[in-house]
Image (tube, rainbow, N blue to C red):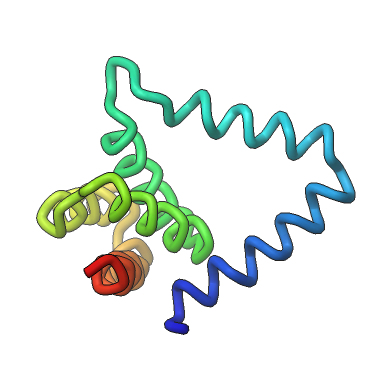
Amino acid sequence: MTQYQESIRKIGHRLKGLSEAIPDVMKEFHGLHAAALADGALSEKTKELIALAIGVAARCEGCVAFHAQALVRLGATRAEVEETLGVAILMGGGPSAMWATEALAAFDEFIGQKS
C-alpha cells in the first residue's frame, strides 16, 4: 500500500471511531459533505478541485489524500490538478507550494492505482 492509500485507510478507521463517538455530528457532517459537493452551478469535479486547493492551503494531509482520490474517480486530468495547485500556491505562498508537491504525489499515486 502506498503513502496516500495508507493515509486514507488510517484516517477512515479513525473517522469510523469518531462517528461512533459522536454519531449525530458526523451524520450531519457527511450530509454537509454530500450537499456541498453535489453537482449544481459547479460540477462535482470543480468542487473537488476547490477542496484540493483548500486542503493544500490548510496543509491537511487527509484532505489532500481524500480529494486527490476523488478527483481521479471523477476523471480529472493532471493538467487540471496542476492548474488548481497553481491557484493554491498563489493564495497560500511558500507553504502551499510545499503542500502542492504532496497533492500532486497523491494524485499521481491514485491515478496509477486506477490504471
